[in-house]
Length: 204
Image (cartoon, rainbow, N blue to C red; front, side, top):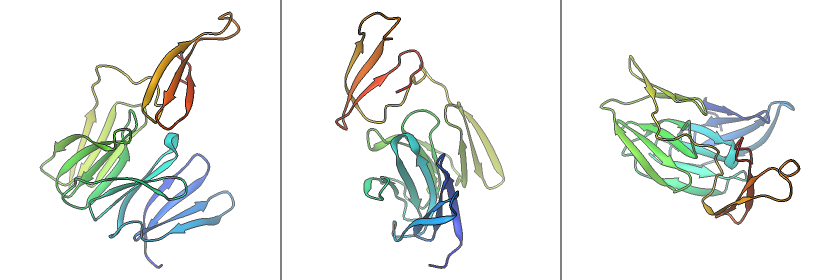
């Protein structure tokens, strides 16, 4: 398919996800080889792509107004529907398993990957064309025409760690002397896994 590359996303494993029309090419930058090319992921041209590496999924947005979540093998996991116009920007929300999107319907929306639903919406009165965030930071920037807005996120609390799935059961676990076996939080998650979390660092 011959079409200009519209958007790029890079991973820590040196993979590049390049958007081309309605498809995405995955390139190994170290070996300089094409790993895969997925066609017709949306009905209209893809406008944005972002990687949620801790959940091992890819999010794509399109001029059809939809946002789709794909697993590592490009199996469709969920679809966010709600924008009344083409999606113009898509980024990872700085805190938690969320996405932030903008659209020609002049709204900013926050989508929860945990709840599979919209959790916030802001009417901007103009179309945002660019969004920028940094994981763990409390700042967001947005661009619209000749306007640049800087946002600060305010919290009642700060997220300690992102598990990635709904926690069904949470218990503190100690085995033997604390000097040998530090305390861990044992989480039973909705995806059928058990995770041990360090209460001090948040590491899984």
